[in-house]
Image (cartoon, rainbow, N blue to C red; front, side, top):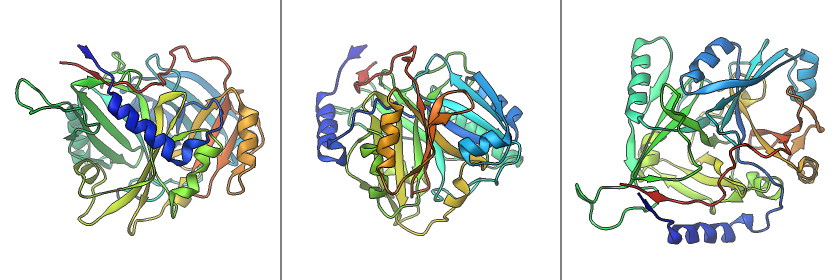
Length: 372
């Protein structure tokens, strides 16, 4: 294995950070996305489903409807389960929220890039196997799944020289799986690794990792509506907002883009973890808007969490933004000091106080390791 840090790419990344809105970032100590939270009224199925990907329950709690109303604004008894994939405890976890009385069906199975949709991303060692599994499940007609055909691309400009059998291409292959229950994107790397960005759980039946990043299709006119991610939460904008469209083969396939279609895109990452990234999309064209069905208490992905040792400082920063609303700092169902914030783009986050460092320290430097 040849170890190589792509200095040119890192310099481009640093330049993007410097020229973006993220040039005056408060030191919030914020994590990458810690958990994606899934609302359901069938926790038995949810736990069985994610066990196939290697997620196991590491904590659970039950709170009354009165307590849930206070914490989440949802008048329903709640059973909550925190699940972890393998040994990764700094990011990429799952929390299942089993509502006794869900507020609604959520965004559900809907056309791709419906506003309000959320997608969680995992690495795998066999993307075609996953594609075949979901395609077979779709063909049975029992559950609505739409699996896009995997497509390969050189996303990071890692290839040099003319490629042939001996000088093999360095690629990532990805696909999306859209469903009523959950939305996935899977990716598989060929010829390179990024340490700390996707750790395959060898005990998982489907050979997958923790959640590496998260996609949000948001109800916004511009990315200015989410600039608080930098000024209040301390995340870095990877670059200025850009337009992706049907001329790019990856987005065209994964997002099922029709000819002439495009969207605004911007990514954010914690300065304390290269993983647990957030990617935001604003459709440039008519799309179904189900952002009202994305509220906490509905089924589906409705909430994400971060953690920090500086909870009060972050709460004060959030309170200083007139377009954000937040709860008071209080203990969540796991007894963790936390608060909920909501923005004007239909996004909700729970910020948790965590002063104990993760057992598996996150990577803070993006490194590409080429391999045969």
